[in-house]
Length: 195
Image 1 (tube, rainbow, N blue to C red):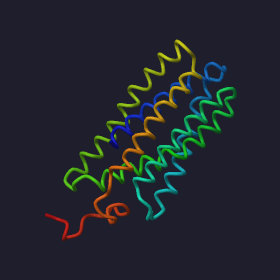
Image 2: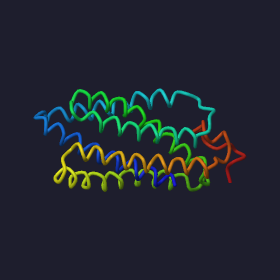
Image 3: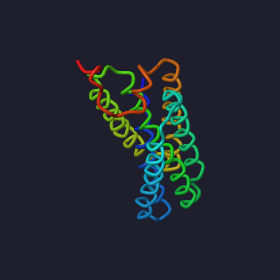
């Protein structure tokens, strides 16, 4: 279930990246695309740093659901602002604020629900899922841009964001972490936890 969310998030990332590059080109400011996407990543960096500094006590499955929903809303914000590159840039910064916290929480959930001896494999699957999603979203975005233009490509990212939000909601219903200590600590297992 978490892998599906990460796959949809990756597809959304792929669609947004190629959509922004094509939109900047359409407006005659191709060089602006790198700055725009860099600011999107900067929003994610800032929020991820703040998010990681907080010692959370709330349910991570619920935070995952809220984060995925925020990413979907971010894709809507980006899509409706395509009439002006400055608005798209501001929308990217705002939308980027949801990226890192959602991915962090997904990884936290994975480490809390899989057996200790499968944690590395779980992280690998999540990483692969994001990159696989990007590998699907980027060329799909290219096809959409060629046929309908960059604005439609950015609108298509809403579909991927919505799928991620729906799957995260499903996760919230079915995934329950093993124990609270797994949610806030990346420390090594205690002697009692070791085989």
